[in-house]
Length: 191
Image (cartoon, rainbow, N blue to C red; front, side, top):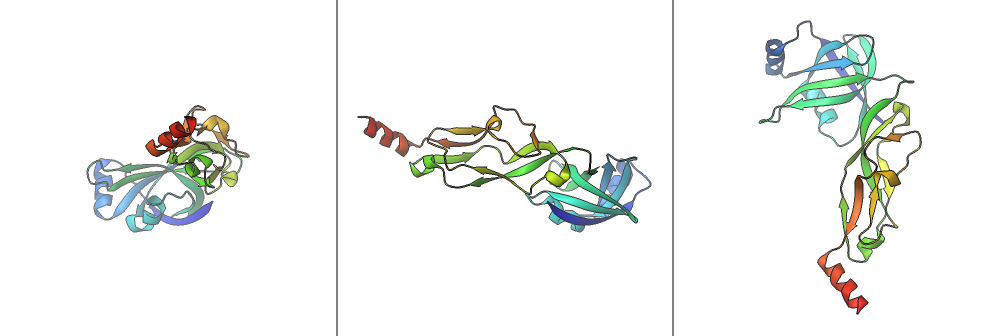
């Protein structure tokens, strides 16, 4: 998992008015929880841009006024109309405590169904997993070479070492759908 360096400044006051004042100064109000105490702090919008606007997951090396901690981004809040970043929740992580996180999926190979004229459909872009942060890969790789026409891979079909999948077992991750051309070819072959 990639690491991201981030520096923040502690904020003494909380509430709507102070948060609004911070946002006018191009600062983002943040909260770090999961440890012994909850920390309220701010970071620069420019500093978090590469952390927020990416499909990758990062381990954040967070320094708040000289205090160091490891964290992950737990939740982001955006303005409903302007999509401006309003707030970030960080979760402090420890070596022996399991964490729940969404990890992106990467498909590996060319499916047999696609070679036969089907269309590959990725139904889920991320999977929710639980485990120790040191066991988290950057991406969950799913081999799809043996996926035929009209076939699917569900959550229950997948297994990753040292990780527990939290999505519903019958959720479809990837499917090869029949196209009109593939249906026509199959019908002609059946005659």
